[in-house]
Length: 216
Image (cartoon, rainbow, N blue to C red; front, side, top):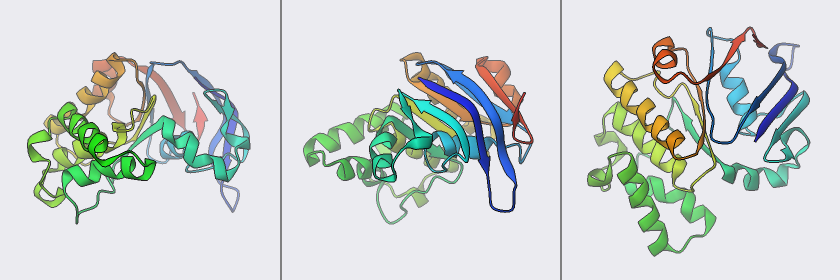
């Protein structure tokens, strides 16, 4: 499903955040990207999500080389991905339901169908009873669960998360990782960037370990 070959991301000034990384991720696999602060975890997630473009090398997802992709094709490729960030990027002037509806509205799904899908996504993360609440009224863990509901409402085949538990207490963090594990159990490919070794020991995923941009 995901094949990287000599994947490199170099920023202006010559700094290489990811250096000649080569790896494969199979469909339905659970993978954690780990490493010290500044190791390149976030950059690698952004490369996978087509937020950043590789400087060199190839990155093939579902048969498409993202490094050679036309910019006009990027929105269509991103439909394969659900994205969850440490900063959830929620819309605080809208309800929880409206936040989850947004990707479906952009995709042009009829409103009645979109509402059913959004409510199902909220139910999966335990927030259906809070569908009318605005994000400001939710706890940090609930906000992150809302971000996950929005990420999966389009039924992506790949779920990408960058330090999704970084701002949470241990109980909330465990709840979030268990949600990711649930999606993995039903066949979704899950890729999580994290520095938390406890979760690695608990879930025993495949681990991609970065050190100053190099894959160990």
